Length: 242
Image (cartoon, rainbow, N blue to C red; front, side, top):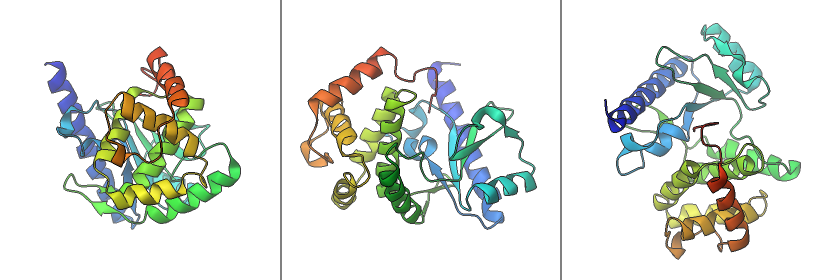
């Protein structure tokens, strides 16, 4: 099979798996939302051509309740995420699909006070769910813009960030409304994301050619060049392909 056929086939499996998991948790009266991955892919011009990764699925209830439910549902848990404070991992299935079950809405950022404000906002906003034709729920665009920006910033300082994550963010911005962007922009300083957003906006302008009216903040060339250099040097390619 060609590389294109392989990518399309993997994305179809991810969509099917996401829909199946959604049905299972809905049967247990739990709200769910697909974060990143298939949720982002559906916004691309050809959703099946976004490079496939794993599935990040938020399940309501908090750590103890979610883990207890996973045991009740006989899901085998992997030790791959033992150190994580916001998600647990399921064992790979027969198709090699990795699933992270998130009991928190974000990995947050390093400033504890800003992190609390961010998580409070995300925990409210994630309740604005949409059931999409692919068979699963996705969070609002405001949630996606804020959560994925925090994800990019954290990974830049911690595990490395890849160009795919920036491409996803470009797609989110192109699909957002002026109201979405205004609300997100107004909260960035309170959530400790303003400076990191300036770096991302410079990459949006310099690499992707995003129009000025879609920017969340003024592009920051110095920070943006630093982030882009990190991406070009290696980013997270081959390490965390989400």
